[in-house]
Amino acid sequence: MIPVRVERRMLPHVPWALVAVMLSVALLGIWNLASASRPPHHPVWGSQALFLSIGVALAFAVCLLDYRWIYRMALPIYLLNVAALIAVKIVGHKAKGHESWFALGPIRVQPAEFMKIGLILMLAKFFHDDYQPLDDSYGLMRLWKPVAITLVPLVLVLAQPDLGTAMMIFFTALTVILFSRVKKTVLIVLGIAVVATFGVVWNDYLREDDSRPTIVRHFLKHHQSQRISSWLDPDSDLRGANYHSAQSKIAVGSGGLIGKGWGHGTQTGLFFLPEQHTDFIFSVWAEEHGFLACLALLAMYGLILILSLGVAYNSRDRFGAFAAVGITAMLFWQVFENIGMVIGLLPVTGITLPLMSYGGSSMVSVMLGLGVLANVGMRRHIF
Image (cartoon, rainbow, N blue to C red; front, top):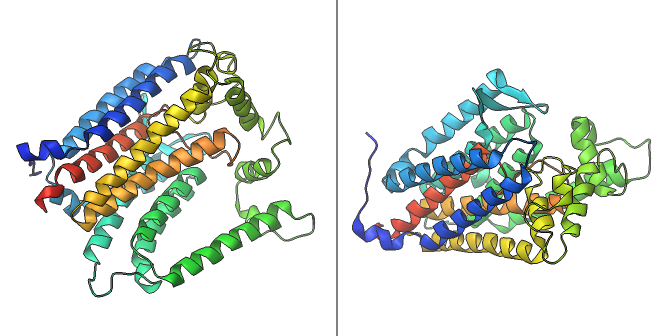
């Protein structure tokens, strides 16, 4: 039996401001989608409203659960998500070269989105159980278990292949691990890895020597390698590999200070923007509402991150603190990558903008994260 525990004294501790801001961004996203998906395209804003309703209902259900039950169920939730990633590789629906979805009639479910929540809860459980008061810092040897916990879904997502989502899983897990108070040796190794990454990029993409042996490039799919090379040379192949990025930057720049108005975006209306209802939804917002509205939207995302970190700071146990940090990291890296991609600062990876981009799995997973944050916040006084 699933334990449900709600007391009157919990209600004042619900992070109402966080709930309000996240729902406000989601509603702005639906309004923005109504313009992005104008005829002759399917009006996906109606489906997005349904996904939001489902997500809110599930978030409310998560709030009702006994906090300690979520902690005990972290391992089964993690294993269930791993099983879903294995199953999607076998019987999943293939689209755009990826085997990333289950096709349930007209509905497509992307298990990798829910794996992020499962991974966060599992890492939070590990760092809660592994705490040693006399040695509360982590060296390389003590980190092998959380690294292994991360590698399992990371490899499965890469096998789909979905490099963008794999990157989000990696950076989210890395943030949680660094939050565990790692030793200097870990930071040194991480610094060496960053330098090595720049060295690989220079050798594989920037070094002017056609006879050079590549290190990573020959392991990547052609379109993945092309995204990196086109990002490093944004003025090349504007009708091919750089088309997405070029059209996005045109849309963002043409919005000016106050935008062209809802439904009046030319890049959006003439459908020059590819994937304008998913990956490049921020371009639609920028073109139609302008620079000031972009700043306002970024401020709302910033407030979401600050309030989420506030939940982590006020948590009375390590599981709640690590879970809140993980969900905050998940949101941060997705916003960072999506907007960086849209304005040309980062490679195009197909990462959606949380609460704004169209997608049922993305919306529901973010709402589940909100449910966990609210659960941690409203129960912090009972520990």
